[in-house]
Length: 611
Image (spheres, rainbow, N blue to C red):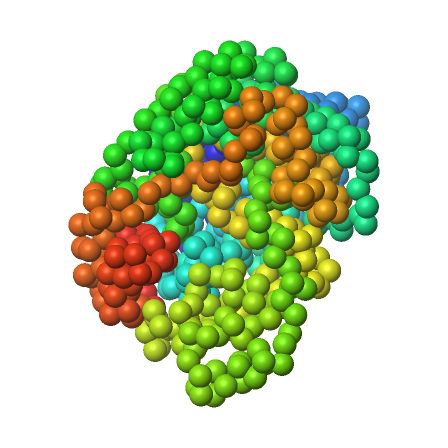
């Protein structure tokens, strides 16, 4: 894993080395800049594969192509053999050089051959064009701006460091953040910067300053019927085993996050099966009742003889909270980010690469909300009549939820805040009168609507699961893991999102995952391989006890930032948010919602934006 940077025809070429400093933690093992005619490529390296000779930026022997790359290509050895048969000669043993020659040989079609997690940018010095891409699920981030040339980077942070780069707030990103607690691609908090969506490519013609982009892979349509259950379980077993084995390639120490849940425990099983030695595992112990899963993790560690490390959850005080949020390039209101960052920091003391079970819930039906379909909430005349009365302010907006049906109701449930006037989920009530129109609230569910349309048009279980992959999974769960781990120079791999698994699972009908309970397939594997106490218990998320922190170590920092809303965030309604804080602490309002605003305010304290 690494940090990448590129400047093409911009007035900021000379700032490249300074900008690399802002992503230094993503690559603590090396830093380099390649200056070409009207192009500069920068790279910070976390050395994992070919430690001795895989340095970047890397240039082809004939000088035409140069590349910066963040991620890992797990099938690079097979691709290398193909290229060698075509006459290409390799000077390193790195996956980076495979990308370099692979693009020269296959062009954009290279992307269809890659199994990995990646964001890379490849500059053609002859054509003066850039080609870039992001992996299927968006595990690795990619940001770009065509403001005054082209700038690309692994995170948003370098754009805050560019002298004279506009820091104007993107109100649509703010809208998405308040609705979903994260920013959805292509938006970012900076109006002049975009995110490349998952499974997408980008090309830039420097001569004409023209950008093109598109998807190179799409989530497939599910089949009508699944194979017999035992055959299906065997197929998934083989796919996950292959994916884990493929992702163990590394020239540095490797371990696994082990929460004690099904997903991470299965990763340990397949690592042991593939012969990973020594097998080091890491879990975090919480002292609050209902948050600790240590005993389940220990049972798995003992079964597979791992070198297990139990990390006591630290007392995350105000300083730790502020430091973790300041390290984010964009606000993320997932409370588990703070503890994931601490787990990553301590894990890095032992290994450079960690295997994670991320993606299991999203890919295999781990959330009951996937079963809540639009057909379960048919339209009724009384609902339509109630909605008519609410719109004309003849009935209170607090009744809005009861007036909705079908997709409208499911969308309402999906957001924390949205375009619902006078409802308790009204986003407008927390924004200044001038800010709300700029958010284009009617587009709050635009990406979801488009994805649902692309996946069949109905909000049934199949389309809900698929849309989740390119929204909640990519821009919340995977962003959390990437930022938390890379802040400490730790690479995290996600075998459940490898190509073998995606290809085996995404063509299945949704019913294959719910028979009768969610996660049917992974539970079957868990029953086959894991201790009963792991799979025979309720689902448990990796979170933090917000109530304890709000009324304890975080109270002062929260109230300090709440007192400065007018300065930090003039686009917010200070009075409404302070009231929300009071109500949340006393149990009368959503703690997750006030946490969303707290994160935003602490983040803005470091990343000042102009309206």
